[in-house]
Length: 318
Image (cartoon, rainbow, N blue to C red; front, side):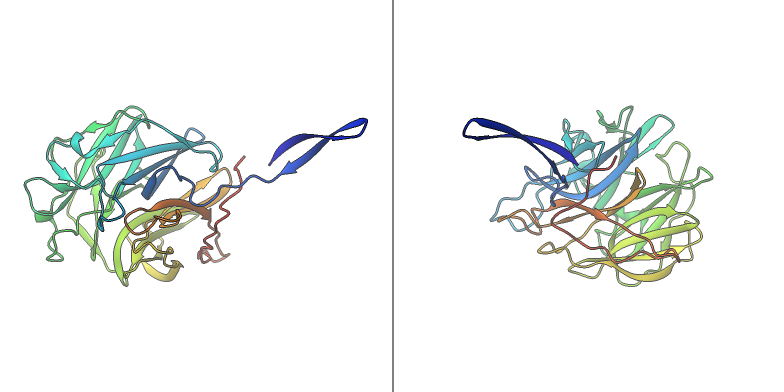
């Protein structure tokens, strides 16, 4: 909420009118650039929003993505854009495609897991960058990819190693989830840049891509994009490694965007569902996407209510 003061004049008199205006985020929340594949991180009472950057021209019908963007907010409504924190060219082994990513904090450092096209090994790959600050600058932590297509054989496609998400469990063990058509996961070592054991698969109905892990109470949630055009579905478990019980659709196809990619956070007492659509008039679409934010609500049994996608967005968090 905010207060607005206005002076009004009538013959011989002037009145000061005080009115209370309701301030909400308007969806999409970023409108001066096309943003996609949102991954939000709560850190030190602020939210950091990491996104891809769609740069495709209107007559270019595919993804044109060379860099990632970062925004910060203290209220989920007003977002400040910061200097570009990471680009494809920051990975010497990568060829193109700054696709979906996620940043997570651990031991005073910030680790960025990102999808790229490998320059010499066929297919998509996952790299890791690191920084001492959530805004960067980030640098390649390995000098090579963490995950490459020759490491995952559950499907014959070359693009199954994408959309990384990392979750640190209550015991301090970190897990990396990722995948396309097949959902993979593996433990990470404490240094966050090496796998700690074998790669496993997760059996999920209609899994396409975009896994995201979060926890609420005693329940773990694995949400993901399903089918194509993509909806977001989810499963629940009492363990971060499953078994997972499918619980249905979380939100529907996001307007005129074929893809759907979510992150879920708890911030200042409320739960948020952050996603993208093609909602910027009149040139938004599958290759010019935009980040949106709406509320997420739980039922008493721990299941999640169907997401209501709105144009109005959310109220300022305080």
